[in-house]
Image 1: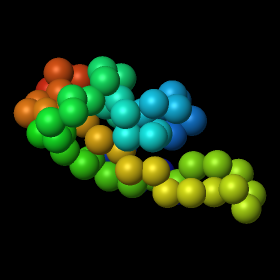
Image 2: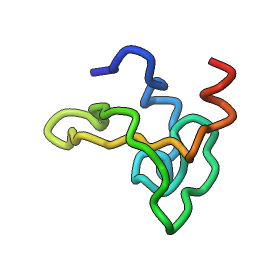
Image 3: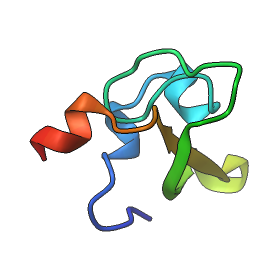
Image 4: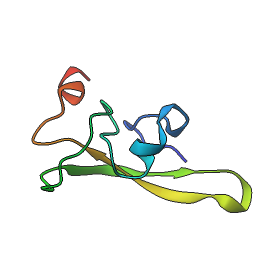
Length: 67
């Protein structure tokens, strides 16, 4: 499942899928949560599928501005 406008989960690294890095630019997210949830995607195969929350660095990700 890919939500419109979100990156393809197959192109994201584990840090991006585990809410540690920005899903758009891969920058590490700050401890002070000013980051924003941009959506959820389904990742994995078979019975090991899970929902991953994708976050963008805040206040505005430079990569998001380019889209």
